[in-house]
Image (cartoon, rainbow over all chains, first blue to last red; front, side, top):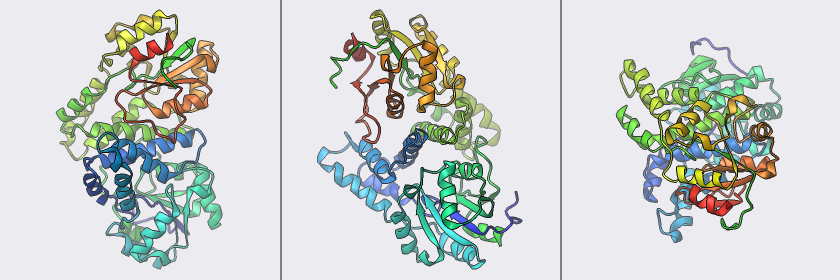
Length: 227
Length: 227
């Protein structure tokens, strides 16, 4: 639907990685450790592939372990063995020091100023989200930062969203999941939540996933749409 | 364990994509349609990521639809809109015309000659496996070609392997899943099957997945290991 006529939700549940954080600086870190910068995309897709694979068989894996281990396998044989640990650390440290996208600070303040409650729910660790929002100076705008490690399973399983909504005491249809990843939108829609997809330059939304209720380029546009 | 001392299974269940088929020619097709050849890896990882995402919420999606649609989104905005269908067709046609890896014909014949029953189980369509084995001239070595579309869900869910074993009338511990993908090895191991991992040049096996019983470089080595 048009982004200019959406009912204001009580609660927005934000995804974190790539939705709030800008992962593009990792490309440079890949180069630093001797990997082609374009491999960042395949690495991150493969990390989610493996995480969802484990999710589909009932596991709740550790995001950081999957990230570091899949990076280590990608580096192995392409750098001296004694440099492996250091190179993995270089990229993982940078992953823990990312900044937010340019629209995030103003967009979050604008959304919060309308009275909407804001929380995060990440497949990654809560400490990663804490650091990210702290560096951006917007920690105070968020009521709660949540990770799937405290719940039954990763997103996009329904239980992951339901657990977050329970913690917040909000009905699914009063809450909106906002994410850049279509698989996250799909899972939230299946769990009965409202959904807002951040395009962030994407060419389109896959037809095999539940479509988002609201589509916007960035958080500033979302704030206008939900005002 | 050492690949030279494994008990012979009654049945080998082969994965198809990348395990038997050599997907490297798709890189050239990516170039033909104006995409960097290295994007083949991110595309395939993303296709599995989205497929596993849908699997984790109980769907049994169509592999070819996910493949074509995710390719279309990758092409959009990077070629004239009127070329989109043709470019998607170019890559998908090539995907349907792949050949097998160099070790496959001799390896399959050698395994079959020891009396082991051979079948395939793919997340992709059965017709893709049929064409692949037909072109390689080894169709007759296989008792049955199976796809997850006829079962409850994609691999790596336990139900996908169990359904295949039921069809073949074989107990899980008498059957070995052979694949290049660690997530497939992991799922089969969880379903109680024996497992054989084809390295095919991989730098290592992720520690977050169940380890394979047998590790070999290719099917010739597997035939020796199981003789």
